Amino acid sequence: MKKILTYLACFLLIGSVAKAQDVNDIIENVQKTYDKMKFFSAVFKQIETFKITGSQTEMLGHIYIAGGEKYRFESDEQIIITDGENVWAYSSKSNQVIIDKVKENSAALLPRDILFKYPKQYYATLLSEDKHGDQTIYTIKLDPKEDTHGYVKSVKLWIDKKYWLIHKIEAIDLRGNSTLFEISQIDTKNKIPDSYFTYENQPGVEVVDRRE
Image (cartoon, rainbow, N blue to C red):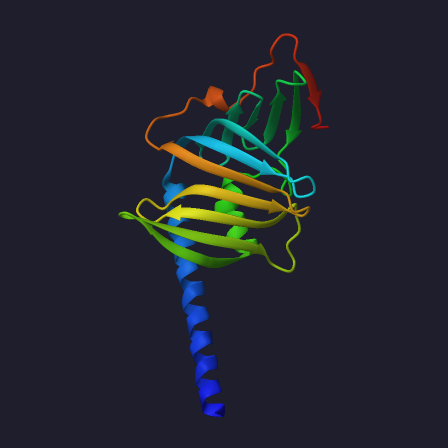
């Protein structure tokens, strides 16, 4: 019986090491894909679910990324832009734009953080490998390491094996609220103008500058 338990323990250990290696390989392939990209644009659907009330909000828009650090989220209700150093957050409801510096522990879900910072600060687990016709989708969960601090409790990624692109992201914050991004119509070939990553003040829009 002891031998059986010993063999079983060894089998489980080898299996867990193999899975860990597999998930690290997947993340590395995705990192290489995004690291080579100069430009990225796509349509997104953002669904926020609030744990206490159970209510949901849904938003449709476009995302533009250049060089991994510059990005622009654009919808009917808000525009969020960063040039890698500054962040502009415009709300059509308040007719206000808030300017701030990019913060390391920001609650914002930065695309480059998911690919490069999170794999170093979070434990990665391969949850599933699913077939959809000729398409293979990996589902990976990232859980924070003991010394990691921030607003994000966990992140789940859905990755297309053929192109090593992320098609869906779900982030859970410390309060249990979730933010789900569904990404489609991905374009990595067309150049995105630099003007997309700066905000020009509009007449009548209140400006709140928090950079000082």
